[in-house]
Image 1 (cartoon, rainbow, N blue to C red):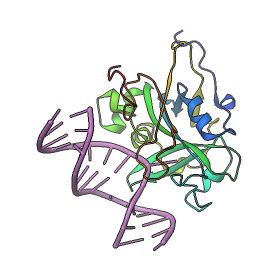
Image 2: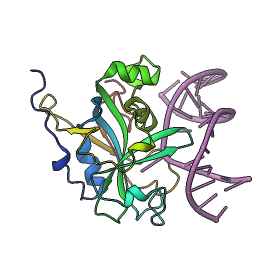
Image 3: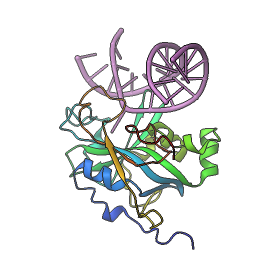
Length: 202
DNA sequence: CTAGTGATCCGCT
DNA sequence: GCGGATCACTAGA
């Protein structure tokens, strides 16, 4: 049996914690939507205390889910085209979240290829908009709990004991660019962009 | 590999 | 009007 224990992990991820801690813990966790998805290899943390966050400036209709209970989804539309998935953190009313930026495809790869109209596994989920498209996430998922279908979060199996996490500045923002709140699995070739300069292989 | 650009919608000033 | 927590595509190093 291949995978040792793929156990539900939603209860042990500590979504009530700070977003940069949750973002780090999520690396290596498997995310599935209706059974389709893969290992989380890249995340970013956002908090209402800094101006890059959608929650900065307080609750509004669009960001309401971010101010809801932790362990739920916040889905927003990016540039009028793409759907991006976040996990809500901290306590209700705070407005913190973790953006899922990239997955290593492991489950339902054919389904993801169809949805993305793309053959290259490396690019299937390499970016938040690509993750949304590959997993079939749209605005109707906004506010759903992460510990119940269609979502599933599975603990790391022990096939990768030496998981190393890299840290760096967040991508695609113009404010609070100094915060090192982007996290990624070191050496993964499924990142949306490489971190500093290591070996560009994988 | 990096840099530039158009697409396309919604929330905010 | 303006500008995004982006992506696909093109051109050039």
